[in-house]
Image 1 (spheres, rainbow, N blue to C red):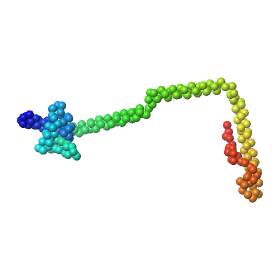
Image 2: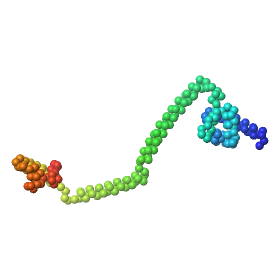
Image 3: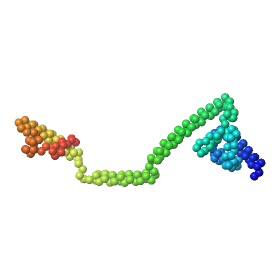
Length: 219
């Protein structure tokens, strides 16, 4: 390529990049700018890097270095000042975009909650296994119920009432006899020189508590 054609290509690249940075008005690295403009303008990466460095040296754009990477953006002082109407329009657009963002964030939260519920729910195969297990349990309970119904040794209401009366009688008798024994032993212990425990051991008395016997509840 002749020097004249190289100069023309370089001038074309600087013009394209300057216009692009001013229109977009946001920072770009050389790689980002190359990726965005390569297809439309056919610019090579070396040409993009050279054009950006040239524009920065000329003061037509601004350059910032972050570590090993350089970022390029339009010089704000060279951009035309926005009118009051344009500023109001931008404010309205910001408000609309903010409302849109909030709506999207709310929608995302709802979808995340639904996804969490779905992930914690049983799968189709797990539900099928659970249903099969419940069916087996139902069949087992039904079989057990049928055996109970077909049994001939059912307790009649009269027999149950008789057992309850006898149980109450035995409870009252147990309490009466225990009270009598306690009163008698207390009377003896009043004149006994040793402790109650020693007296029980000497005489050979065993209490309900020694054997874990508890007065049964009423039925």
